[in-house]
Image (cartoon, rainbow, N blue to C red; front, top):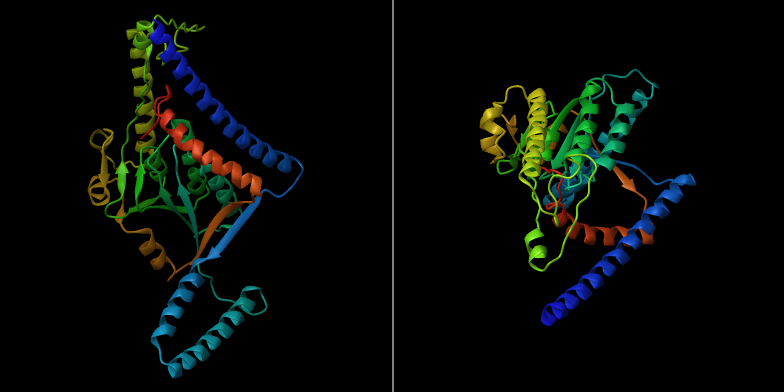
Length: 356
């Protein structure tokens, strides 16, 4: 018994030290977030939209390469030709401002990036970017979302998918490009698009729901440690980490998973009506070429190919929301990222269902 108490004391000391360190980091994060909120209340600008004209970026890259391949004489001739082209562009710009009669302008294609974690944190920036686009986009314009996500929390990805729904709801064409992975909650977002393109080895699908939770009840019972879980409501808590789980609670938990899976399948069915859900809603994932055969995607193509082709017919703009950060903010967010890696592992053991 004495040996057990000594071991338990050492374990408790290590645990307290770890928890204290985590709380210290979290307090720094909370301080940084509080600072952001205070500045927002004071009316300070918290960030802004950055727009990059991808046509010009690609043209610059092409010209730089061409210049390196040409002789000095040919390079000078090329420079003169570009000056004439620039003059023509300026003249076209005057026309577009109403100074001279103008011809029809190219349609605009807006590019957004979504890099999803378990909490779909990028949805906050996505919300702002979409709000900006919807205020300037016109009929015939298009939005491309370069989407990467293995999935995550149900409610978080539900909100992210709702943000994309605003694009199609406004009558704009939406294309989702997947270069690496769009599975589970990531695929739920992708299926809203009018068109999904994927790289040959991108991972798609995983239309399923999973939840796992460790239980230490037998370990605690072995050492005569009692844990009481008190609830008001029959199913307020179905499965617990420390308490004794029951067959009834386990059955209810499984029922909740099935209900969530049903909602997921209904959502996919409403947005991809040609899919055979009995075949694809099994929780499996597939590579791009296999996903095309199953109807999960519409075309095999990388986002680079898609945008390069689009630049030939449209004015392509990359739209990004950029948060203004002080040094304290950057320090806080760096600490948050470090803690998040640990928290993400813990989330996998949480009682809430998560898609992955």
